Image (cartoon, rainbow, N blue to C red):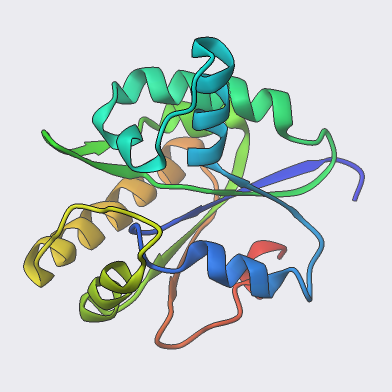
Length: 181
């Protein structure tokens, strides 16, 4: 592969993006960049102190997106397939915030893949993940968040005029085939 191709992998927190990407590494060569890790790294670089992953949603989302851009530019390879593992909506204490398509444009996203699953399964994954402290959301709230996430991803793909794939985890567990078409 002679040039850089960036795929944005979106979905609700707890859908299993990182786990699916770990499995995909057995079949596909790509650089996996997590948006939250890039933001944390840039914030620590600028402030000199670490920030907890789960506190990112409580910070200024616009500032976080600026940090994401600078982190991506610093850490992304110039060639090959890059999968940016992140979100198109952020669940903040003040409600859902949609990430501007301009962020994805600045990163050079050439395709979006959004993962969806039954909200009950997402809720169970979130409850069983002891590494993270997420706000509790009812099944109804998660259903709304899922819908808003898909719509935000659709709007971003439309704005960038790039493909969007909606992948149901009920039907697919091999994400590799959707990343490098």
